[in-house]
Length: 239
Image 1 (cartoon, rainbow, N blue to C red):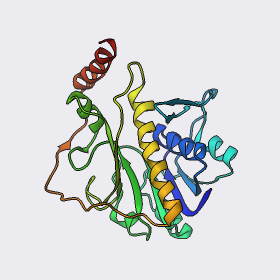
Image 2 (image 1 turned 45 degrees about the horizontal axis):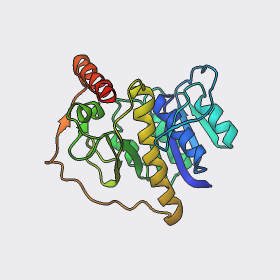
Image 3 (image 1 turned 90 degrees about the vertical axis):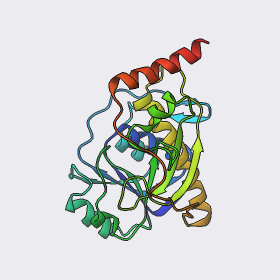
Image 4 (image 1 turned 120 degrees about the vertical axis):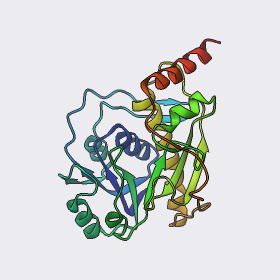
């Protein structure tokens, strides 16, 4: 199923590979992928894998290769920041009805880009509003909680846009790469669920508007705390 009018704005990252692979596996295809920067060559691909029903990304397959086998058009853009004027011009020319946002981590989408006309759908790896900010998945693990993913429509501040969907996921298995495999995979899973609903209704319906004064904002986790979170997962699987 091709979603004409839906553009995936993608940087060449693990998250973007997970998104497009999960969408192709579910036969929910964006009308076009606007691919930023330069995608480096990937290693040999491997057979598809799933965990708890969740599609796990194969980082041996590039975004371009996934799109090619699914017949999804890719429009390259040399910009190395999402707020480059080239990106804004490309989106204005494409005139999408919905943008799936999958840019580089740490880059905040500018007001100028948000004002190009289409809502920006973003998958945040944290249960909003309780877990705003960076690397919130690890803080949830440290707190003994299930990881959560929240789908939001981006606004002008960080992680405060209208909530489209939320889902809690099982805690990761020991030995999995949380940054490259688990985190992108659970985000991609909720993306597939949201776009499945969009395919049926032709609209994104927010569940609730966030109160920006509530919740907690986290910052990039210290390596020691990150290591403790990983050790906690390994300990759980041994007991």
